[in-house]
Image 1 (cartoon, rainbow, N blue to C red):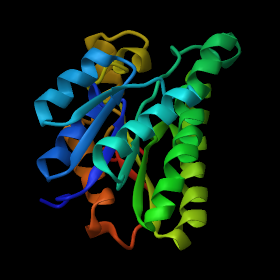
Image 2 (cartoon, rainbow, N blue to C red):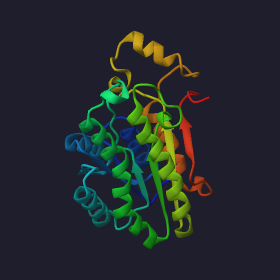
Image 3 (cartoon, rainbow, N blue to C red):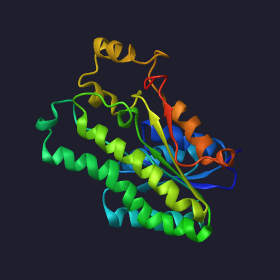
Image 4 (cartoon, helix red, strand yellow):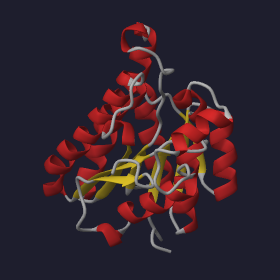
Length: 246
């Protein structure tokens, strides 16, 4: 029960890595708000783990403010924030990505971190404690061709993590990131362009451990970084990638 008595918000918690993180936190004693743009998915995971659900578009200020206020009203305090919600554009030459797709990637993958900081960091500062985890990607460390603007958004997230860690450390807050390789999530088809046995085999050949990331892998890594066991760790971008970035 490494998170006994702790409270957490997990964005994008209705599926994929976010759901894995929410399950891991709840199993270790945390009270979890499962926040997702898909209200039904959030409700399903929340019901499974005994948490609460919150519909949220993390790219909208008013929605993120409402999420923070709902968590505070329900929990009374907020110990952990996981910025997991993310999207990508389809693989294509960088100049062919539409402006709408570029704006969506930046709004969901980067602006969301800013908005969450606006509304949640002041609450954590007041408590003089808190752990923030940003779910970045190996794409931010070892960019793949044809995913240029997604790569850039995840590189931004890694730099933001380090900047946040330095600024917030004197206030008792820790900020870290995890960098998963592609996994069995709703985004996999978008990363691959087409989900075929051939495309899977080609991608898996670049991962030394020979498999995709799983929600359980992310849950375990997130649990460690957000627990008191990682009390001396801040500003890291932990590769959870089976050796992909070596």
